[in-house]
Image 1 (cartoon, one colour):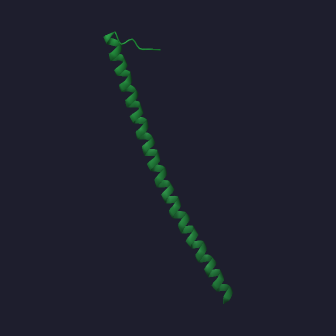
Image 2 (image 1 turned 90 degrees about the vertical axis):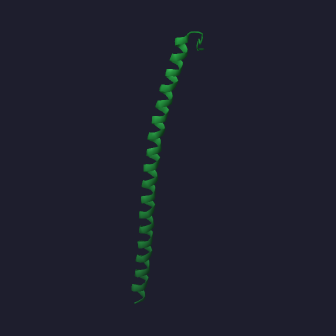
Image 3 (image 1 turned 180 degrees about the horizontal axis):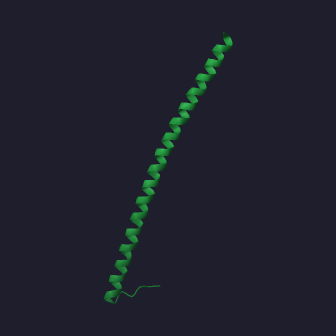
Length: 70
């Protein structure tokens, strides 16, 4: 539906609604930005734990091989 800008209060209402929408979008963007940062930190932690588990598994296999040879 087209907006009738011939009325001064219509322009004010339009810009007020525009500001509300921008404020809401900025708040949503900030929330999403924090969530992405949290997920990146969690992923980094999980990758470090996985790497540690892989190194320990390799060490266990090597120890089993040495024990078998003895």
